[in-house]
Length: 434
Image 1 (cartoon, one colour):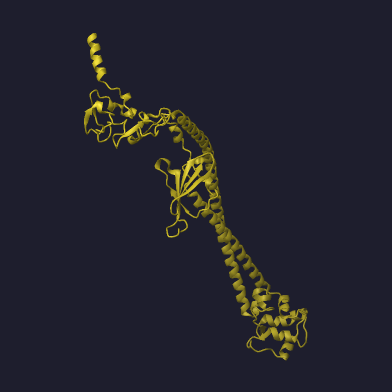
Image 2 (image 1 turned 90 degrees about the vertical axis):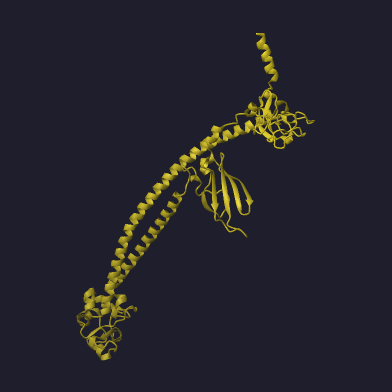
């Protein structure tokens, strides 16, 4: 039993407690538990353990002087219990300036450093807890926006289907109105050709009334035909260019200077109907002419105009619906996120006037929708086109937080919105060492 005690005493006498070696983290303590010698961490040299932290640099990697400023490449580990641990260059050890919040870097200097880690940790924890609350609220709002986005997406899909059905119906109407207009134009053309024949066959073909022909010849509309009116409107069939003489006109008026409608029907109407000696002068289009007075031509013309108007209305409606379909299809083709969570931003304005065009989502693979790029903006003076990179951050409100121009005509914006909140952030939680 006594021998055991002696051996133990010899063992502990040669053991150096790694907890007393300054400037090392818990993950590196295993390198500082040699009993008699120390192997530089880069494996370049073996030195006696007494030379660790002796203020003289023996290892090229500076691993033998973690707690002094002897090695230019050395690092000092601030434990900072209660706050975030970190490394500082070993040149800052005992330089009179407090770099570690636990004051461990100034253990042998005139500086009187206070341990502020607990206060810093409290503020850090309060900040992180606030971030967690923001994240919780942001995720709740995001879920609402996702639900709204899904509903809006379905509404737009339903709207698209309705517009496409309307377009199909209008297409059928369009074909029908085109057919009707073609028929109306054809009937008008046939009527016009018949009028241009200018003979009795025209009158019979059109089934024109005695009254309409009488009114056509009665230029002054006084209810009777005169010699001058006959000479102005009636010509010989075989000599259309010659104006009737007064005797010829009187003969047509049955030797009277005036002829009323009843006498016209029993005399001159029959002559005009036969069409073998005289006919109505071809004054196509002139006021009072056959073509302008003929009721059948007027009806055909009105029908053609009516069908043309109807066709134009349907064409305009069809064009408008197709434009709406195209605009809606373009909007639906945009990537609004996996759950359409960014759909609510469509058409929203956040008081930022930009001229760039949407480019793409450029976030990292783990968070693809965390960043967007706008390209091909207005030309920059003595430079290329303007562009903007927008980084989306988690927040309970949707707002533009900051705008920067790190390089000429290249802009960076911080856009806060609930849809940028990710559950993975909450899973990370507060740092384990706080």
